[in-house]
Amino acid sequence: MADPLDPPPLASDPLDPSLAATLAANLTDTATIQRKTAASAGAGGVRDTWSTLATCACGIVSQTQWTEGVQGGEIRAITVWKAQFPVGQDVKARDRVVIGANTWEVVGTDAGLSGAPLLTAELKRLEK
Image (cartoon, rainbow, N blue to C red; front, side, top):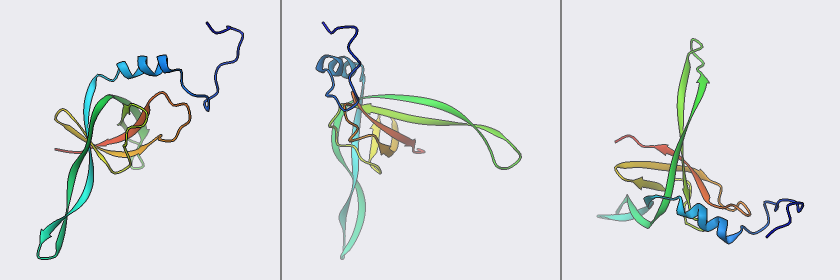
């Protein structure tokens, strides 16, 4: 057991494996991660397709932010979506994440953050 007078670990310290396992157990959704690839469209043409890169556990959360609009001082709610994945999952900006019947585009991730317990991706919900 750790000494309660010891300072907390720094962000660059490796994550306690038991904490990582506890957090990973909270990833109760399943995501399909898709990446855009170029495919032949015949006659020398190329078209973009979305190929499945991986299927993995994830957790998705939303956060509503209130902003004041430029025109007329209107106040609007903007919902920011975030998904959490196991550390090391290959997720990059411009990938797509499909969870159930919903599809999001990855805006960015915190990949590379030392000691992060989970990889967090900010998402933009795509219209159906």
